[in-house]
Length: 313
Image 1 (cartoon, rainbow, N blue to C red):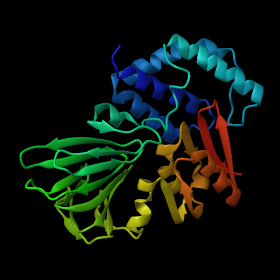
Image 2 (cartoon, rainbow, N blue to C red):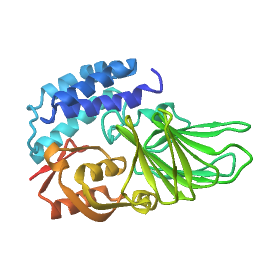
Image 3 (cartoon, rainbow, N blue to C red):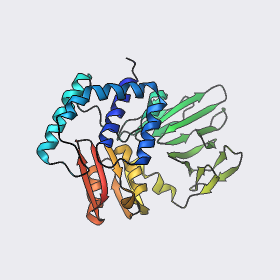
Image 4 (cartoon, rainbow, N blue to C red):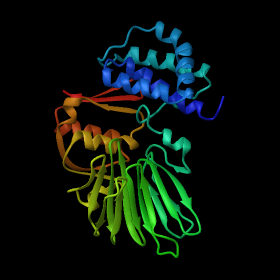
């Protein structure tokens, strides 16, 4: 067994729980099939999990989308622990943020885990601050200093150097800065870039470019470069462990909270459209969810001890 398999088993467990939660639709099925086909380790993990947990789940009543009664939840956890013991995994090893996330950490030079921020010194005297569940590759040479962001978000404090400008790279483009501070965040369909201190140059993979003054931000999408209205200070609040929301959708807030939430966190489509304002502590995700439920018509449900569902009440 390779070192990859345990992480793949963790994800397989999350997918199984999701399928049995009662909230699995056609889009999630497509995502699951893509995950399964992406790596043979995923297929091996899924097959192993099916064999190990089949008997355990067969002896428990079917799980619906409704909240499990306390005694049934305790029995389900006991079965999971027992079955996972056969797989040689610790009972708590399957606390994931969401299916499919975290794979970049397996193929990166540097990465962070759930609710973990980390500052890293670079060979040129610059430094990186990685957001939770983030991953980067470093490409430094005699003249080059490239940081490839694979997942999550990063703030680069760039020191002047005889090398070329430091580049933050994503699949949609790059941000180049000779000196100062900049930030890049990856979302499912876009990259977001801010000039936090001094200016920087943004280049899209289609060849278009833009120069950002201090405090400005843009998003890189498949269409090109688009301005961002959100302030740089608000967007970078995660560096201080805070989440600032100014009339943002719940979908945006939950997306920012996921890297700090221990377990799978899902949001119903109707609840995702609600808007909320406030300042929250990223390191207290359960309290954040409870606070949002106090001011919005939300129901926060917990399944199997590691799956959290947020929906309209």
